[in-house]
Image (cartoon, rainbow, N blue to C red; front, side):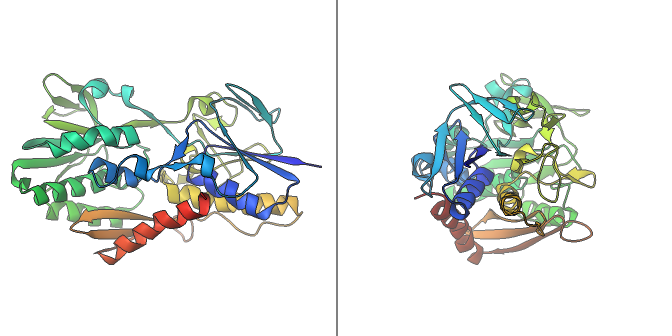
Length: 381
């Protein structure tokens, strides 16, 4: 009897799950991957676009070229997830399933902050990065504010990486002395789940004369006067405002029975939801880590998908799954001058989260390039 495996969302988690399952299962299993987009981009490549190092087209991988014959890719928008009836509806069709993996990520909500759509810019979308390049390239002097509006948000080190890359960019142009770079964060440290790494990030910023303002939660902008309003504080002036948009669960998830106050709660060992054979991985989940949660990053979505694959195969073969999600992952942060730092994370492997920042050194640039190439080679033809 043919069984159907349905995967919603073709980011790190969806791509890893679909290609790995296709590799390990025969034709008695249908694998369908649904995403509203035509292409995939690795998050950090948006900085290449933002600083003019690569074009937007150069960082795209099209789903029509997905690896592994036998994966049915469907470009469509998901409108209903019904775990009670093993059913998913899209704008144009509907799908039943035996196993469901939800990997829909987090949506950006730029309009959640008054004035931001008109008065600010973001680099968390490819379109946003494209818009920023000419602005940065023509920026001659003044103050650039980078603001984290709220948590959670994807790729927690990215705002600090943006600041460090801006420093490097203006140094190369010989105008760094004319540009003030300020980073405003809502909390007391850069990365709440990693105090030791936070102190290292603060040191990197200080070395580049980038000002970090803690407990400065921006709640609105006046685009005409170029003023950012800070909660319980004075307003702050800027010439160019870069904000990390508020992240929200996708609407289809928020209105689904799988959600828990918006995000999806899962068994942290095997990523299964409260519904049997329904899993969720990556940014769409909320997995507690003490007072915080597993960070929203592609590397964690990928490692979660690997555990889900193991769990599904164990069920199919009537075996016991002895593997558990440990929240392992690696990300790379450019710090300028050709140097890169490597962030290693193991969230559940010990009594408390282990996060280590290694470098900076130029050798990690090659590892960062391989990180991208290896995944594109694995997931696409």
